[in-house]
Amino acid sequence: MSIQIAGKKRATVVAMTAVLVLIGGLAFAYWTSSGEGTGAGTTGDGTDFTVSGTDPVGPDLTPGGPNQTVPFTVFNTGTGTQDLSLVTVIVADENGDPWVSDPTGCTAADYTLGTPVITYGQIIGGGTLGGTVTLTMNNLPSDQGTCKGLDVPLYFVAS
Image (cartoon, rainbow, N blue to C red; front, side, top):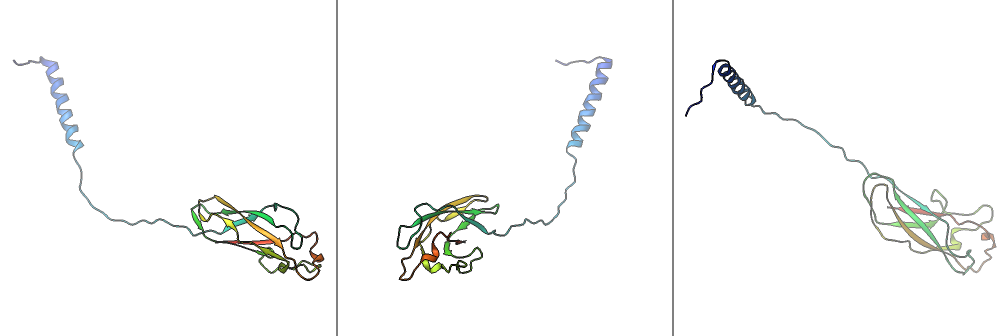
């Protein structure tokens, strides 16, 4: 059985077939080549943690009296995850210098700090970890009246 196509239809079919063959041939035409190149990514540096203490919990300090608990937060100021492995706290000025109150003469020796309580580990970028530290006023054999009513400055270092 054969199909016969009349005049104009036949010309149209032949033309369409030729176009399809031509397009099909073009779809498979390409050049081969090779090449090389370089690129780079950039890694950042670690950023410093920020540590902030908040209002103490507990009664006002007195010589030999109960301690106060001072909550604190370690903040990762960077965008990447960083590992917190140590927090230290001392009674000191905001720049870390030994504290002596002016003009009264109350000093860091009038106080004892406990070991900070915090779950160490990784802090995601922009994240925080919270902890606490206890502060006690020592009962010294001398008059500590110069310490009455003072705020005791704490200096935190996180690494």
